[in-house]
Length: 174
Image 1 (cartoon, rainbow, N blue to C red):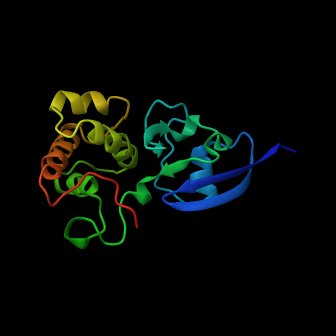
Image 2: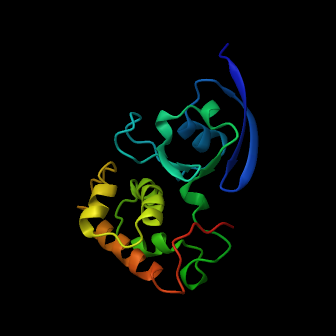
């Protein structure tokens, strides 16, 4: 029988305590144990970026992290980006999500959660990025649909809006 480990973790602001297999990947824990299917699993080798989440505010590939490694830590998934209807026009979207929608920064949507979770800390550190800086930031996230230009446009739109006093790139919590 596989070894079990007790894990306490906060995911999207909610506390969870579970006994998990010691070798359970964080991506599987989020998707299967917690039902947070916005974290997509693509390559399972940390190459594509689809499974990116924030761990204590930093982007990580959840397919490369074992669930026991997150004991006592804070995780943010795409489901936790916005809530409570506080997004643009009360729609519940985070300003970055809204910019992706408006600038057509997604097509099939498979890579989008990982892109968003990569870009949140990037924009926090670099609120006025150039197109080249954006391309560098997302270089570890693979997208087969968009050609990346609309993603760059979406990030520039979100950054421009965050410079205004009515918008903020801070993570909105329910």
